[in-house]
Image (tube, rainbow, N blue to C red):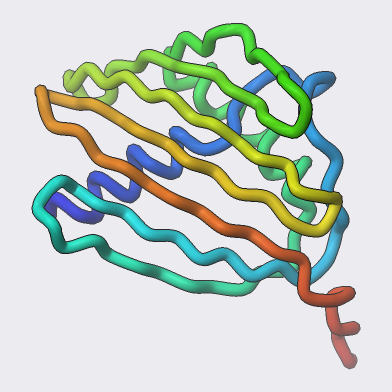
Amino acid sequence: MRIPIALLIASLALPAFAADELPRFRTGLWEFKRSVDGGDGKPVTLTNQKCTNPTEDMKKKTESAAQSGCQVSPMSKSGKLYTFTFKCTIKGVSLQSKSVITAESESAYKVDAETTTGGKTTRELLTARWISSCPEIQP
């Protein structure tokens, strides 16, 4: 059960900051490769594809984090690097996270997030890349 909780926490740690500070990414079919290391030396790696607009997804995560009572620091930007931290209490458990997003282009980005909860640190590395336009749905 530790890994699903870690994945939930890590998903909250992903881009959550003011909409006007977001990098702009293409809408379409994206591939996400996520590796989560719970500190036990056995990282869990997941890969999935999704038709999405990552910029809009980031806005929604920001809103969700705020509704959950998270306090997000002002984001700092240096070139292609976006850095922010947040603090939350989820189900009575306090957590802190620091994320660094590298916006490589409108078609690729990486996120390095480190989250500490209950004295345990989880690290997530996410690599996202645009694959193509979304396939049209046939009636």
